[in-house]
Amino acid sequence: MTSPASGADGAADLPDYAPIPRSALGPPLNDQGYHVGRIERNLYWVTDGVYQSAFLTTPDGVVVFDAPPSIGNNIRRAIDEVTAASGAPSTVTHFVYSHHHADHNGAAFLFGRDVTRIGHEETRRLLLRDDDPARPVPEVTFADRYTLEVGGELAELAWHGPNHTPDNIYIHFPGHDTLMFIDVVNSGWVPIYNVNLSEDVMGYMGAPAIALSYPWTHFISGHVGRLSTRDDVAVHQQYIADIEASSREALASVDPVPFYVAGGENFWAGIKGHLDTVTERAAAPIIAKYTGVLAAADIEVFTRTTTFQIMQSLRLDRGPSGPVHP
Ligand SMILES: [Zn+2]
Image 1 (tube, rainbow, N blue to C red):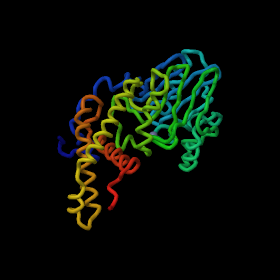
Image 2: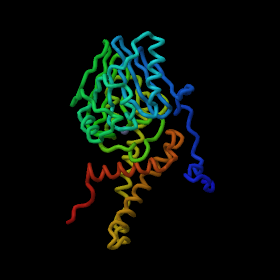
Image 3: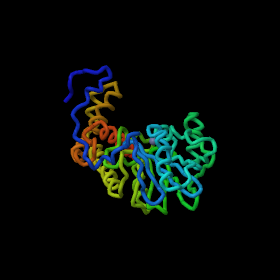
Image 4: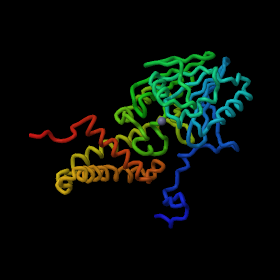
């Protein structure tokens, strides 16, 4: 249902989507627009309700993990607030990139020149490519694993292959019962367009199992206004598994031939008819099942575009893409 156009940008035309369950939202923000919370001991998370950052306070200085520009200088305010109360030093000495994306790290430049920046070697390569002064390249890089120890506190960084991006890493805090892993699970919410704007669909689909293979109670997902639980990751996993199963069923049951016959010499019209029909058939039961379970599941384009990507990955990565000509 839409109302008549009233704004030049169309923003007034938003349909009446289902209400967002209270459980999908986080704590209220302060007057400056952020919330800082203690996860365990000296590990904290900061959110603006949509993005997340984290920091460790130690006797030798503060370690910051990700700097979304939307939180920006509120990361500094959150650190000052926490260290003023605890008496720990407030100087940021180390900065860790989860991955190279600007929406999670476009405020990385805020922490000065003397900060030691750490990231995966692919993060460094991509940041050199992107050439964005807001995201200084990490000078400390690693290939598979890196143990960061500052002031007696540990963060275990690990790369387990490409997923959302080629460089997206797992950050485990063994002394804080916490895992930070960004842009795969939006706890309590559906992934946005195209498997959450991810590059490697197979890697994205396998990532939650890797996350769950670590011991942790608290999960920093990079998005939404609250921390996550193992149950949140399991619900996300089920959503993706349901899309995979539904896509397999739709690929097997929709006969492509009539679409290509109808398209005639316009082969692309045949492809559109076939793949759109498969996508629609695969996505419809998922949208119905998860509306009311995951927030924004009724914004159908998210599940539909994610289904399209997964269905393509089933054809192109796993195969077969189609019958072999006799
Ligand atoms: Zn990202």
